[in-house]
Image (cartoon, rainbow, N blue to C red; front, side):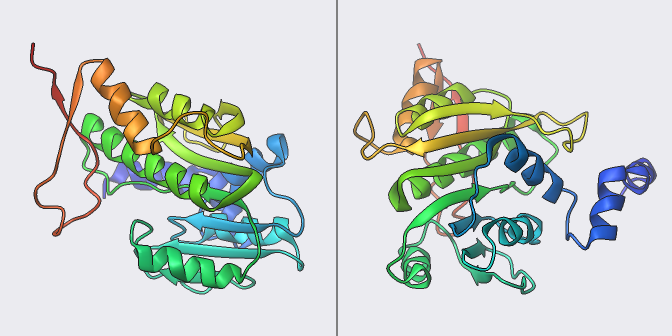
Length: 245
């Protein structure tokens, strides 16, 4: 950990404020700002937080849904219990995890899916952006499958190749899709948030969001290479290769 990183974080007003208010991460204020602008979460909603560790977004979601709502968080990492929420450990790409989420909903309706999910950063921007794109697309597919018509979805994305494909895939599933950069994001960060509202009863086009994004990447000359070692690490991101003539 560099001395410069430590000094910048120590001076960070969002980090200091989050700590003083009992939020587990400064990112809680990103969701608060998204909520203030879009009202994506309503009182009484059932909300799923994908990639919830360490729990900052889950905390904010609990506040927004109130006592009549329900919040379910899921992550590959063990997350300390969040008062007022159900926190699961699991891989959102596994059927067993989806089944467990469905059991927790207990016949109710899922109104909103939020995801501040991030890859394990490698320091190589192209690689990190590609992995982030896959994670966000995966979250969109989960939202498409589980959300009630009219529901909302928010996910973090990093600017770069393929983001327009993700936006178009979202527009096939929601009547309103936009991008928003909270002031709580670091000034040097390339992250933005995709805010999708009013899920359509049926997608406008057949196929998964993952398929649509892969088609978009191919259309701009990027080939998605299958990972032959998926059993070892199932979340590896798109590996992008120049398209051969």
